[in-house]
Image 1 (cartoon, rainbow, N blue to C red):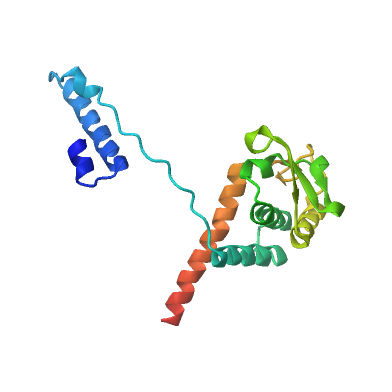
Image 2: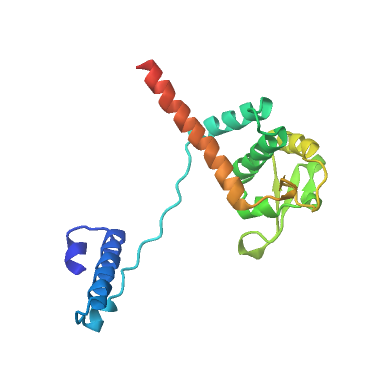
Length: 192
């Protein structure tokens, strides 16, 4: 391991190789070979925490444009309410600096739209905080709430009459980004 680190191999790669080696040793052991137990207990390296990747202003603008366009004219078989949900969640994440879990837990009682204020309950550090939003985010949120209708719960964001999950929000906004990347690739090919 020290030799591989000295050669500049990443800890993730070394750990992957160790897992493969460990699997091979277990195979040999199943075949009747004597394998020293010390080899089966080699500890993996601590891997560094990955840094978050941020979108550029241009990428954010493209995702915003995609979500705005889909809210204005939803694709076939996609309910308007769902496109408005995607756009409203994006605006909270983008302009309000919200976390996915905070969007997931937002309740109707936490909204003070005339004051442009929303409350985050039990956010990071288990603390409550008030978030003030720009008029554009409030407008998007009001449009969504008008289409939301009533639901079995007081969660702001509902999907198929159930509180939305942070995984769903993540995947739908990621899909908007992927649509933009695919569109960029198509635009580059047509220009060439």
